[in-house]
Amino acid sequence: MKKHFWILFLIAAVGLYGQGFDIVLSHGRVIDPESGLDAVRNIGIRGKRIAAISSAPLRGRTEVDVRGLVVSAGFIDLHSHGQDDENYRYKAHDGVTTALELEIGVSPVTEWYQSRQGKALVNFGASSGHVPARMAAMHDSGVFLPRDEAAHRIATDEETLSIVNAVRRGLDDGAIGIGFGIAYVPTAPRQEIFRLFQLAAERHVPVFVHMRGGVPNEPNSGAIPALQEVIADAAVTGVSLHVVHLTSVAARLTPICLQMIDGARRHGIDVTTEMYPYTASASRIESAIFDDWEKRTGFSYHDLQWAATGERLTAQTFAKYRKQGGSVISHTLPEEALRAGIQSPIVMFASDGRLTEGKGHPRSAGTFARVLGLYVREQKLISLTDALRRMTLMPAQRLEASVPAMRNKGRIRVGADADLVAFDADRIIDKATFENPAQYSEGIQHVIVNGVFVVREGNFVAGAYPGVGLRTR
Image (cartoon, rainbow, N blue to C red; front, top):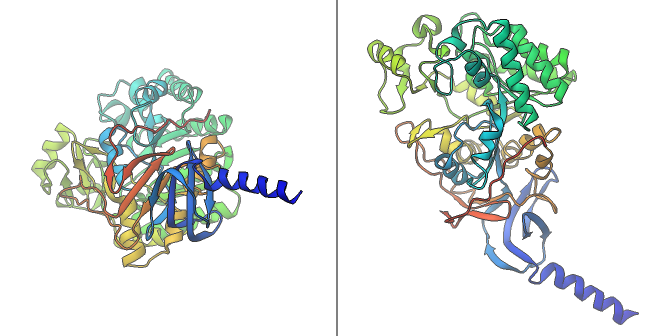
């Protein structure tokens, strides 16, 4: 009997500690906010999943010593407009293993997913977008965001029906909820928005909302009624609400808006929010949020920076670029709003980023490393574990009720997806700037997506495209 026991023990030991793993990450400081684990561990990966987490040595076909590095679940970016190979490269170098287009969303949905399958470094996904559906129904001439019909007139009954049906088809195709850029379609009546909240509730999917207004320091406290609108719609429909980039729309009103969200949560409304760690926003200059810029906002044209050249604008160049169209950066967000968001435990981190031929906002490349390097290590505004929680577990939990795949992301546990990042906590930092945003973050040594290295020893792995599309079904 004793001999038989030891034979079984040795068989089990060989299975666990022998050559059974595809990849082993050894001696890393493993941090998992869900379980509270923060200790040196060895991680064994088999196929696409984490197969072992052990204090004892593990053996595998590929063994990587990550001694001195933090090993975390890969970062989940809920707000990533850049959905192409250029942007996925900067995402991976910023520790992101899942990048989702949930604010503006897409339409049609099936074609969008098909065009990326087998070609993505990281996992991807999108909501069914109200804005693109409205642009199509109203024949707007804008690129990505409305610039005429969808932004400046009310939809007819026939167009409204077309919008709702297009969004519904996107949900039929597995889109991750419904995306709203209400600030970009200011003529969209409240009943149009409410009807789509009802649709989301019927389908048991969340909504992701850029609220009305979106103008920092708006004299009439625009962020408060805008937030009241979407919380009220969520309350009466029962839908799960995610408010995107709160600090950039609430500005100096961020503290009171955080109180409103916290109060809604405590009274049973399912509402969450996010931010990016910069005091400047960016958008398309031809969009509605730049209508009557100086008069409406109290800011000057000099507060705007043309992304393509880095120049600050004047009245003349503002008018020129409005006609031309393109990306502009707005240096208008107060530092105190940023700090309030970073210090709030209910706020997730997301980039709202997109680079086009190396031009754009630095948040596209540096959001997550900036939080970990500047606000965790240097300024000590939040702890490392809390920052990781708000980059991994919280985004996964936001989606897991409707997206089954998210139940195995954002965690380090046996059976979870092997989406992992290993970084040097003493060195991690963003390098992207407003003048030169196309710079990879530093300190991120290894990134694994679905059990495949996409970054190893700080360099890309050629030919690796393990990212998959995430859907509600």
